[in-house]
Length: 290
Image (cartoon, rainbow, N blue to C red; front, side, top):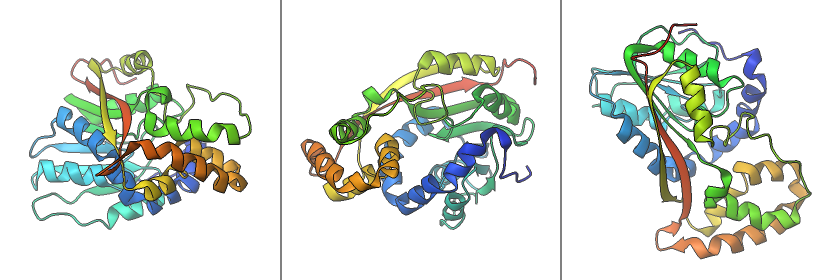
């Protein structure tokens, strides 16, 4: 698997994840890992990586899920984490690995267009790393080709923004203070590009996957107290994007968002509803390699 950090097809995403977004995820890596862990762990549970398997982690980011995979497959297995973000991969490469886990490899490649190998992995996994492809059918086809004939693919992606209170409540609190903006293209690469289950089904079918199962999963997620949650909320998701374009509004919006977070305070910190799809698919009956 050669390293190909640049790809004309995903040039905008590569720039984004090596600049503002990558810097944010590196800065808030521990908080984001805490927040997303329950969602990734449920998807891992359903995928069921086994001892001795070879697994690829798509959009591995700062490496938490890659390390989780490594601990599950043990020293007899192998794990490769791939991502387009150099700063996030730098964090991943320096994270400690337990003695009972295989040491993952990390590669700066574009899973849509780079050669991931042919029929080399027993399983592929992704925690929120598959919504950013300019051509999702091409990307998922490329991932399928890297799977063995009876390989399997499991990933977790967001359901619609309207179902994700952890993002929607802060955004709604900020909207009266933000300039009006044109509606986002629901099919463009971004967090909610795979929010429509019918679209996910169609993409996977077109990519040659079989036995597709798409199940909703809801839980509460959080990363800390009100102030730490506020700091993260102002940096990520749709609100983070809006504030990067309107930084002069940060102080006013922070007050409104802090108030919106208060009803979700618990003894364990701020916990808010999150809604995802957990998707499983098989490569065993896949069509040809076109």
